[in-house]
Image 1 (cartoon, one colour):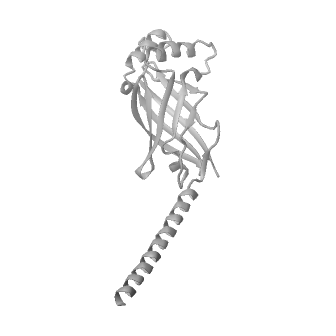
Image 2 (cartoon, helix red, strand yellow):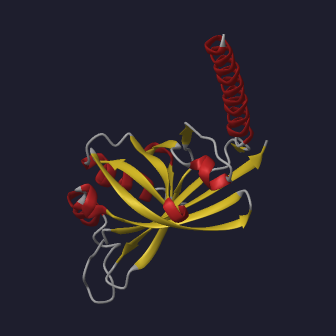
Image 3 (cartoon, one colour):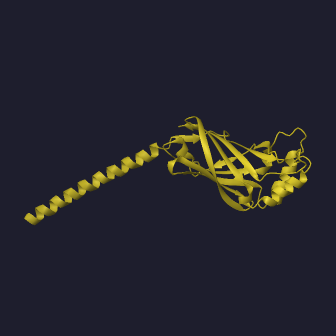
Length: 210
């Protein structure tokens, strides 16, 4: 009889333990769902760059007017929600606001045109420990990482800046190609024609709370 009582008690304890665990799992699941608090504002993402010419490092700015964003994630903060976001940029959307209308075609032909698989620039946004941000960028058949610094206009608007060293993407031939095509325009007061392999990248992202 004692054994039966012990068995019955054990079963009751197990049942109670299982129920408690089930409730905890349900609560945890609810908390995860509640953390999905942000969405990307459609067509809000802006990507621009600054390249440099002449030995004086004169800036030449430009932007890409189209960017495709997918795999926007979940997170308790806006920054966490961006982790793992994928993007692709059609290079044909290049725009440098050149009044002559000759610069963009030259860049497309003599810079991007000499690389491999450059119909799109693609990548993944990453957030690591301590809110460190970076992007893995695929260009010229090569993927490399660009560390980013960021600032916020408010809780949901972010500005990211980084430096792309084109040598890391095996793109020095493309740099030499565009320099030759624009030799006169890239010649400074010292008579030297130079196109820098360093490019500053800039992005603006706007999110909204659900």
